[in-house]
Every structure is written in structure tokens, then in C-alpha cells.
Amino acid sequence: MTFCMNISEHIPKFKELIEKSQNIVVLAHYNPDGDAIGSCAAWHDYLLNLGKNSQIVFPNDFPQNLKWIKGSETATIATKELKKAQALIAYADLIICNDFQSFSRVGVLQEISLKSRAKKILVDHHVDPEVEQFDLIFSNVESSSTSELVFEIITLLNPEEPVSKTIAEAIYVGIMTDTGSFSYSSGHKRTFEIVAELIGLGVDTCQIFQDVYSTFSENRMRMLGHCLTNRLKVLPEFSTAYMYLTKEDLREFREIPGDTEGIVNYALAIKGIKFAVFFTEREKRIRISFRSKGEVDCNEFAKTFFNGGGHHNASGGDSFETMQETIQKFEKLLPELKQKSNL
Ligand code: 5GP
Ligand code: MN
Picture 1 (cartoon, rainbow, N blue to C red):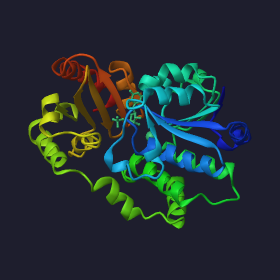
Picture 2 (cartoon, protein in one colour):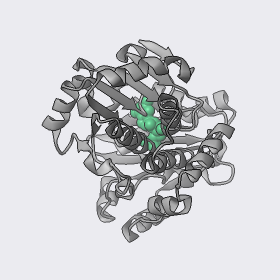
Picture 3 (tube, protein in one colour):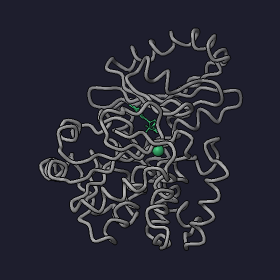
């Protein structure tokens, strides 16, 4: 395993691995988001142009508003075609792993991925990568998104040729969605320089914003209204706000994949709130999203108490208790968090 913060150092090794491989799987985490899909779509186009047999594999399906991303329509989705997804991974020469730091994040594909004889390359920006699971690691927590890293790597792999418009659009979606449309502190000078390059390559930023964020169904907007009106609790003494949606809520508003994305940010948008949490009742688990402003360490909190992780200001986790028990547990943890994080 080679851990790499300085990207250029390990480009020759990456190049060699790609050259030696014919069957290449491009993999992302469970519940693939804009960054995960953007990264995979960019690799896919890059590898196809090199004449490789590239296959995108996702553990489960992804939101409708991201289906327009070129190449995503070819993805093998394990929850729909498990045998095919497993075979692709088992017989791959190389697996490029995007936007996750451990195979525990690929759901039903975890075991087969760990067992596969393929070389595994990680490209990611989450904290604490499981270094022993990969052969080569490109990990930078400073990076706004995995897509930003993918762009840097692709331009170093092939400096002579400008990236295709397909790649540029995919990378842009990843950066835009993972930076909260350029509103988070994770967007650095370099991020904007890359965006300028992407615009130069023909990316229509206005169109992409509309495609991603202005395509919700009426049901979804009403579900958001219900959530804000009836399912929001504000705890000013802890600078915290949380929301939840039960299975019945989701059924009532005919939820489809992607409908709960971004809802947590509304709680964080309340003045004075530094910690926002969103609980969603799923099959056999409560899915939790954590977001913060400033000091509160979402990654640490999710990892310590809710079987999850992620980034300092954005993380996710799961609880295997009921909604009521989960919320009770969460509320009990706040006094300690307040002391620790200056809430
Ligand atoms: P979301 O709340 O949007 O599902 O996740 C927020 C961020 O945390 C994303 O970057 C996501 O990749 C990461 N994340 C979500 N769930 C988990 C988890 O269970 N483990 C880890 N390590 N990261 C997670
Ligand atoms: Mn990401």
C-alpha cells in the first residue's frame, strides 16, 4: 500500500496499473451522491477513451436528478443486478474506488471487493482511510471533493490532452454538490481555479445547477414543508436543531431516492444553529445526517456514537434502535458535546 498526499509522486505507478489492466471497475459508496457519481463518470469516460473495458458499479441506486450525468446510465447497480456487480468486481484487474475510505461503505459489495484479486486504488477526501485495504491511495481531506482530486489526477496522467467535456461536466457536478454550491469552507483557491478551467472546457454551470437542484417533484417540496413545520426541533441552549421523518411520512409523500438529500441543511440555516441533524427511518435502521458550522466535529460524533463517519462539518451514520430511542440517545449526548465544542 502506498499512501499518497502528494499526488504527482505516485502518478507513474497509477499510470502503470492502468496500462497493465484491461477490465477496470469504477466503484463508489452506498447511496452514491453527486461527488461519487461525478468521479465515476469522469473515470469511465477517461478509461473508455484509452480503450479499456470500464464498468461503473454502484452498491445501490442513485437520485433521479443525477441520472443525466453521461455514463451513469451504464452503471451496474448491485441491488438490481447483484450477480453481475459481483462478477465485475471479482474478475476486474483494477478497481478505482471513489469517495469512500473503507470497503465497509460499499454495502453488499464489501466482501467481494475485499476478496477480489484486483489491484485497488483509492481516490478520496474522507478522514481516516483504511490504508491496508488498498494498493495505492490518493487521499486528501483538504480537497473539496473526490471529483476535484480526480480532475487533478487525470490532468497529471495525461497532461498533453485537455479533458473531455463529458469529464468536465461530471467533475463540475461533484465539486458543486460537495461544496454546497461553493458555500462551504472546503472550497479553496485551487477549487475555483479548477472550476474556471471546467468553464473553459464548455461546462454550463447554470444549466447544471438547474438540472441538479430545480427538478424536485411537488411531493418532495411538500415533504420538506411537512418536515420544517412538524418535524423540526430547535434546542437553542445547545445551538442545535434536528429533524426527523418516519416511514409513514416517507410513504405519505411518495418518497423516491434523492428526496431527503439536502434537507438537513435547512436546520443548519437557522441563525445561531451550529449543529444540525436529520434522522430518517429506513428498513431496520435510522439513517442520520450530521452537519455543523465551525468547531463541532461531525466525523468524530458519527464515528463515536452512530456507526458512521465522514468529514469535520458533514458526516453520516446509522442507528439500529427505534426513532424515539435514537433521538433520546442523541439528546443525552448534547451536554457533553456542548462542553467539548463550545456550542
Ligand atoms: P450524508 O449525510 O450526505 O449521507 O453524508 C455526509 C458525508 O458523510 C458524505 O461525505 C458521506 O460520504 C459521509 N458519510 C455518510 N455516511 C457515512 C458513514 O457511515 N461512514 C463514513 N465514513 N462516512 C459517511
Ligand atoms: Mn465526496
